[in-house]
Length: 390
Image (cartoon, rainbow, N blue to C red; front, side, top):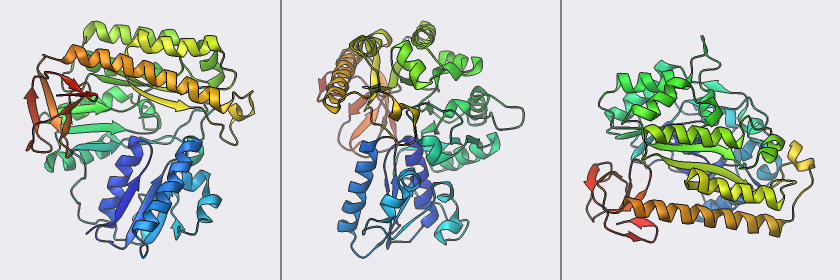
């Protein structure tokens, strides 16, 4: 029996949690909470997870790592349920856990392999505390990434997901400053039997020409583009200190869809950013329709101490919650319309362990009983039930 690792937040945390679980091996009396601090709600959920874990494991040693362990260090350390904190920068170092440096690998809990190719961030968005929790951008080399891909392929992974804090900045700290497209091309070339390669959230303005070409033409690179968009109005984007404008996102999606009509678009969107007017909110709603955003991560804005946005004129919490609900409703409508277009069309689905699976565009499908987890099966959806293709 291995240590229990509870993961909150982003896909990078999910990837790192798998590494922590493998590194800790048979430490069955240990519970680890890999925390998130991207919003105040994420911190609340972290504290809630810690209390729940302590109730479920009253005699275990409970350690906390992740971004909240950096940004909210004193508050978490003061919780009676917590036995100790592991620095976010040290959580993949065996010395921080007092375990051997090279434990035997253990099977993943997930059918898709998440590989963190990059960590940290060099940007300074006015709402974000993640650079405080993750540090500057750091990239794994091509050979290091491909070594991890090889391990997952040997264990039967049909899909690899490349993740990180700012994935499109991969390579900028490496010799020669290679662009992300170089890494993606190397993976596809070195692993011709890898059936699926998927990208996590990308900064659209940093998609290099080779990566664009691969998205447009390479069928093993999934037609699923999740943009770190944040807002649909140029003034708010400038106040966020983002590096793109609305038109950049629109042009990128239009160009990609011209080559790949099956492209499914996702996006991160913040509701109720300081100074956001009704006009700004309307632009946020309209970009959902204009881009056809069917995978939406909507975050109600919450001020984070030490960030410039926390000093800007704030909106009321009820108004922020209302606008977040309107954004989620708009995404749900766009998603429903998109799912309807998939009914009756053949699709290949990667089966998960919970009886569902995912199409290349990341539409979730309810699968027949007995479908083997990790297999890719061909189906024809006939209907939609509870948001799932059936």
